[in-house]
Image (cartoon, rainbow, N blue to C red; front, side):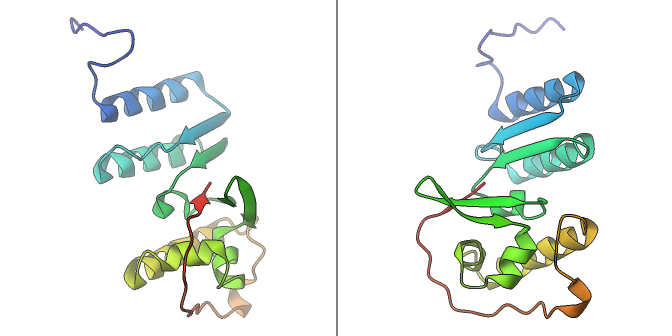
Length: 158
């Protein structure tokens, strides 16, 4: 309580400032949350804490996440993939991976390596099953295998 807080917050770490902003959004009961590279400068443990808090505290809200880390957005209801400032894909992550194995988002996932790509695919599938009102695939009737060789130019997941 006696700790001096600078107006610009420079005496807090990036992790601490991130948590303060998240707490402020929770206390304000925001209906819209915009996260711009929220996990860029924090460690994986704080990232996991933030993601769990966001998912539980803002489950009835619109959350717009701008991120390069695919594991941050893989369980989103919908994603927008952009290249050079233009939208090149939009949809449920699992649908994009399943229906468009050679397109932008699939290439981004494949570039993470076989093990991570498989993990991301499984996470996307689980999220699609959980949020079936947002995902248009009939999962019981679809083959979930996605095998291709990919090359990648720079894209950004939103």
